[in-house]
Length: 495
Image 1 (cartoon, rainbow, N blue to C red):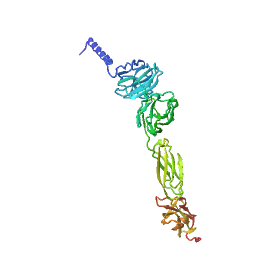
Image 2: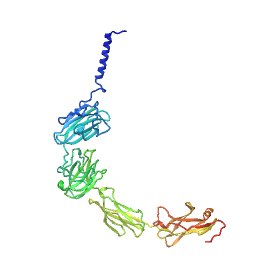
Image 3: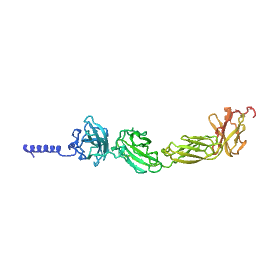
Image 4: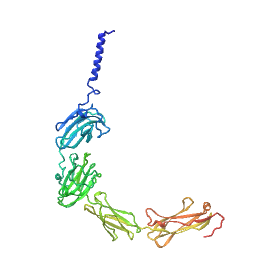
């Protein structure tokens, strides 16, 4: 069918209109970015509290958008701007958004922006101290993917009630626990330093006051939380405070101090300025002192100097001051260092320690020390001076023993030019005799290899049955002067 020129014109016009409509019709791929997509068009916050909800899925990213908070994850951004009307704390949040967002707070102008604080997540929240007259810019961006249904809120928040020393929160009794919010805490002028503070002393802090209404007792203080620390002071004002205890968070390990009756102690808790995670403070009565006795060697003899020290699983117990009674009439005065003692006789002794912790807790602990001295030795090792190939000759080992009847084994070895090789083993009972020995008799037949070497060295080793050990093993091994060995038929001097 042939179309008229008028019909062809109408079709072309319809096609063009369809293409134009497709270009400008609403859709995901071609929707316009939000009105506050760029820093220069930031949505103005004119009054607090402020809330806004918007679709940020079409937000774009300007080449100079800051990325200091999440350098590799920013995907499109929208901006809000607020000029503080007074000094105080501001809190911004994306709670209520349908996905993770990156919320970053800045001061300054485009090209000279300074990052103040940031957070990310499905409910990203930042709290910071604002200065009257300063303009703050809030960039909210998608996390790894473009944004979505964004909920943004900004409001002022009150500082921590116990932010200042003068407003220290009373501790009614121990045990006591609190979770301070360091995002609304600050450093107060003239605050004392802490000897255990990891991040310096110019960090946010809150204060607690504990008065011991009962008898004097030891009290523990601990914090759990990244970058936190607890310090305890005495005194009535900031300039006169004196530190009595301090501990930075070390997996929840406490510090301890002796709380005198009727005395007030000021507890300063510091935390990270960016409020990373929760911080928990706990005050409690100190546990009973429970020292352990460390002794070395574990099975001493009368020839050993025994080392004694006191240990504890609890860091607050150290360094303990300990006085010792060794159980044989000897003692050692109080010290924080290990002590040594030698027992003159075999026997079982009760060693007693009297320990005192740095905060005044005391404890007494006993331990049994068993002193047993097994002492055998090789008194004589007799080998032939010379022999011929094929000769069988006696070798004897005389063993002395003066303390307990022992079951002893003598191992006889010869050196074949490379290593020691066992050639005999004998086990006998050796009674305790002050002046007599027990002979271990052996016989050895000299081989052609011995004759080829021309001499043989013999070794005698004396061993006691496990778990018995010899107190002086130095005399339990003897190597004899080598025996000269001649080939068969050679003449040797008889011995």
